[in-house]
Image 1: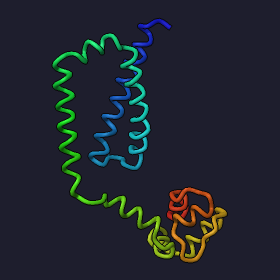
Image 2 (image 1 turned 90 degrees about the vertical axis):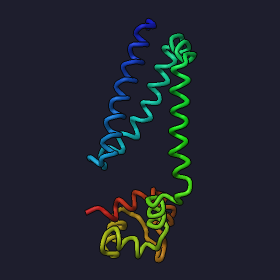
Image 3 (image 1 turned 45 degrees about the vertical axis):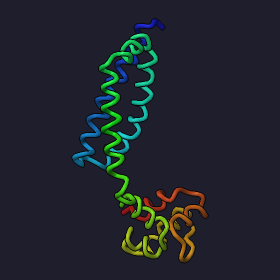
Image 4 (image 1 turned 30 degrees about the vertical axis):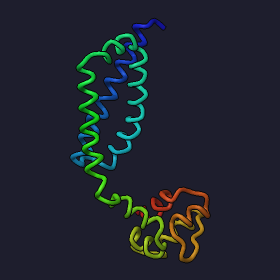
Length: 162
């Protein structure tokens, strides 16, 4: 494949992934279609990283020249400073509330968490049994998942389904 075609592909994919990641990031910020956009944003974010690396490699000569310019030094310094401010600002705030809640749901007694997720403990157990998942008395979702060799989020999905 000729070098200009590789550069064309690298630039095209990087640009398109940037647009999708940018738009989906804005949508997530404003909570538009969160349920659908989050997974798209995360997966295509990984694809974007690969596309960006492909772009840098395909354009290495030009990039080397660009990296030596003062504007790049200014851009990287600004990015590091702004990122550091966000990281330092979040250090003293304790645990992420979503993480705390998820940990308690997955590690709390199933009698309580099934009630929260389904509204009826017995119906939740029936749904799991229909999927060949054995529920032990007093076990947490994490323990049930481990014993049944499945993902705890699959159990949450089954229990909370309508």
